[in-house]
Length: 218
Image (cartoon, rainbow, N blue to C red; front, side):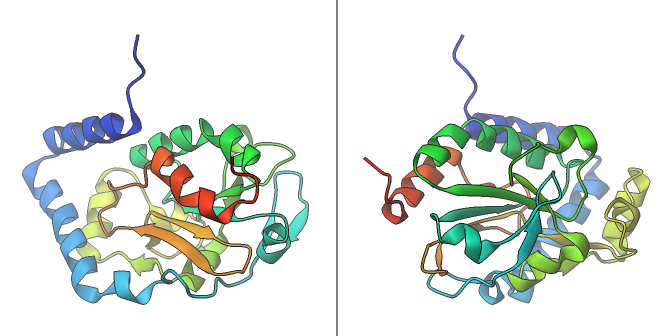
């Protein structure tokens, strides 16, 4: 059996989400996308060629490092996602897990960053894969955080999803789903950012974007 591609899985999720949601709820999500596009957040976030900020991170074993420490050994992929509750994010994480060996072979670190603290079963011991971004502090430095408005808050609450509680901050804030390649020179080599939370960077395409920045490529 041929495995369903990442693009096909996203398409299936899009179709399902549109079919299952009542029209008023879908309208809220559509307005959010339009609002974010109008506010210019895509132009305000970090762009290719700009310097990436350094930040500290802690792995599942409680060990500390900094982004620039990792860059001394090779480029780093930063994959910002909204949370484990998001079906699109879960699909994306599964897809990136499948290219992890190729990323390792290329000498590229991969960090999945979320304002939702991972549960014990979601943490991966002895690596730096999933990073808890408390209060969206890292995402803020990349300019990709936005606040939910009243109609969005009501919608999420009706789903039993209290973002302020899930993220343990008391704030209704989320990062845009975004993928950055940070080069060894500490600059943004590539970015994939969209105000539509259903749009994600294809892992296979990302591999091709990474290769020019890797010393271990064929």
